[in-house]
Each structure stands twice: as structure tokens, then as C-alpha cells.
Amino acid sequence: MINKMASFITHYFIKKEIITRNEYDIYLYGFELLISTIINGMSIIMISLFMGCFFGGILFMIAFIPLRITTGGYHAKNHFLCFLTINITFGILLLCIRLVSIDNAIPVSLFIVLFSSLSIWGFAPVGNKNKPLSYTQVNYLKTKSLYFATINMLLLIFLFIFPNALFLLLIYYYSGVFAASASLIVAYIKNKLH
Image 1 (cartoon, one colour):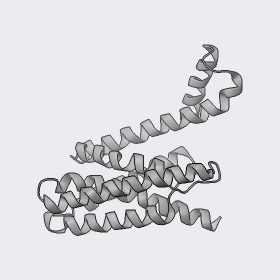
Image 2 (tube, helix red, strand yellow):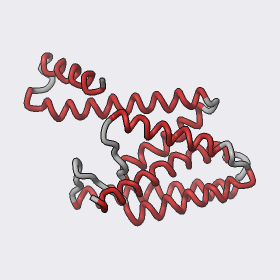
Image 3 (cartoon, helix red, strand yellow):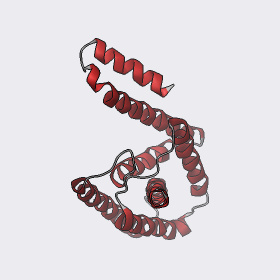
């Protein structure tokens, strides 16, 4: 379905002479990614609405998307498996968040920040066989990833100072950080095994 939609859009661009036939494969791939990302984002918002935490879903994506882009991570074999993976992960994290209270928010957040920071420091960025990274890209993405890790630590310090004010908001944010970091580690292990 995603491939057909992307193909339709790409052919439309060729017909309107926005792109050339030589650029077909590049644009097809780009539109597949764009459509897949939109579908995944919409499904996360729908799950958030269903579970009564719309803003939590937004915070999850605010943390997950930029960190996942800069660190790399697990790639499913197809768009459907990607859809299932992100949505099941998000659903499980939402259920886990319901177990977090004011009393254990700081230890949970501390664990996630340490897990994420160590993952980023040790493994980021991770490429894959379809998208190998050049030396320049590795350095750029590593630096950017470390900026995100620093922001996550600063937010944790803010949580220490004002534990009641932002507890619930940051725990949703940190669930996105955790998902991106776990994806990074899974991809790193998968690359080492293959």
C-alpha cells in the first residue's frame, strides 16, 4: 500500500516534470519514508487519544524522532513490521508509565537518562547495510546525539529541582528517549551479528 502511494506520487512528479525519470528510485524511497512516518505518527496520536494521554504521545515523538534520526536504530524488514514495532513499543511504554508515580519518577528517569547516555556514547550513530555512514556523517551525528543526551540530563536536573511540576510530562518524554536508545542497541547488536 505504501509503495503504491509513493509510486503514484513519484509518477505524478515525473508527469508534471518536477523530477526526471532518472530520479524515480530516489523519490520513490523518499516518499515511502515520508508516508510511513506520517502513518506511524498518526497511529501514535490515535493510541494516545485512546489511552487518554494525547500530550504524552506528542512528547514521546518529540523525544523519539530527533534522537532516532541522529543515533540510528533498528530497521524492520518492511513498513508493516515497522508500524507494528513502533506501535507495540509505544503501547507497552504507555502501560508501563501508568506504574510510575511521583515517588519513583526520579529513579525511573535517572535510569533512562543513564541508559540513553551510555547507549549514545558507546554506540551512536549506527548505520545499516542500506545506509552506510561516512566518517563525516558519523562525526556529525555523534556530536548531535551527544547534544540530545546533554538536553536529557538537563531535563533530569530540572525534574530534581521541581519533582512535582513536570513529572508526568517528562516521563512521557523519557519513554521516547528510552525507545530510541533501545532501538539503537538492537540495531548495533543486529549489525554485529550479521
